[in-house]
Amino acid sequence: MDFDFTDEQNMVRDGISRLIREQYDWDTRRSVIESKSGWRPELWAQLAELGMLAAPFSEEDGGFGGATEAMIIMEEFGKGLAVEPFIPSVVCAGGFLKHGGSTAQREEFIGGIISGEMVFAFAYAEPRGRYDLANLETTAKADGGDYVLNGHKAVVIGAPWATHFVVTARTSGGQSDKDGISVFIVAKSAQGVSTRDYGTVDGRRASEVYFENVKVSGDALIGEAGNGLPLIEKVVDEATAATCAEAVGAMKVTNDTTLDYSRQRKQFGVPIGSFQVLQHRMADMLMEYEQSVSMCYLATIKLDEDDATRKKNVSAAKVRIGQAARFIGQSAIQTHGGMGMTDELAVGSYFKRLSIIEGEFGSVDHHMRRHIALTAG
Image (cartoon, rainbow, N blue to C red; front, side):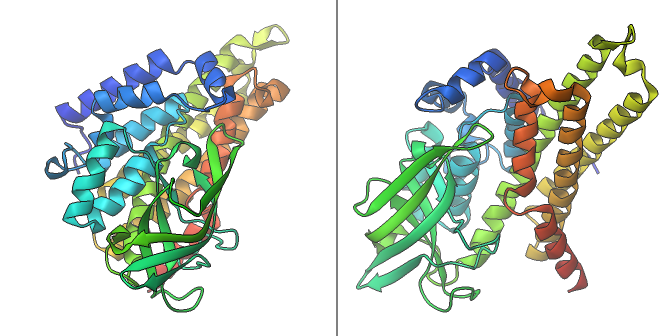
């Protein structure tokens, strides 16, 4: 199988790598996440100007790529621990529009996403959902040709910066039924929408989002009413694969940082990297990283396969990368000692982000169970 990237994909990597390297140094990132806004709209505008927000879209929708381009961008995001909402706005919202949006919806919203003028957040998780995409208490009741939404969405990443939400809601059936689930586009400014914003442990911003008798038109429905779960699962798998790519980038920098530290830090008059036990640890960290790269590539190239194949490969990648993220992050902290957990060293922030990624879009245990069920089926 050919794992070489095209010239165009290499250009995407060079462009985003240079931007992150020049504008996302450690001190700059710290100042950004400590600022009132928590992100840089001007950097988002630069990403749009460079065409990076168009990368996962087809030429028909005004883009030039697909899942591989999203993977490349998120790997570079991971290297710089960039907090900008590429996955919520471009991968998730863009995915819903690409795979389920009407012609009118695609024309209205995809251009806004690509230009950076519209920023979406994906409001799907609920306090009692436990990774079950069908476990929804948020409801959308039909009201003539419109819908009225009520409910609470938890830890909506990027919501403080969003102009719109993609919202999953139950239009019929019981709380955990597979049928009866629908997807809507809701403007953040809509009457009845309220948010409680906060920072997350890994430096991003999120919100609790509340919908109280929020009325949206029938045109806000993405796809077929009551049959939204397959679409949600596909988009979440694409987001999971992109998150795996981010983890790969973060693991790369964590490994390099730890190796450099082991060469500089001395005990008993010699670099600690000369100790055999640490050499073994760093060799294991490298192996975990290399396996993660392979699993990330596999999951990405399988996203367009049938549902069962896509799900199995995404879950396999999430399990392996989640395990690697924990091992690499913890090993890096152990090598650095107590200073590794402080904000003075970058490695502590990489550890935090890798720890969150381990449970994002489904924990290792969740994806292990899903993989086993799919394989047995």
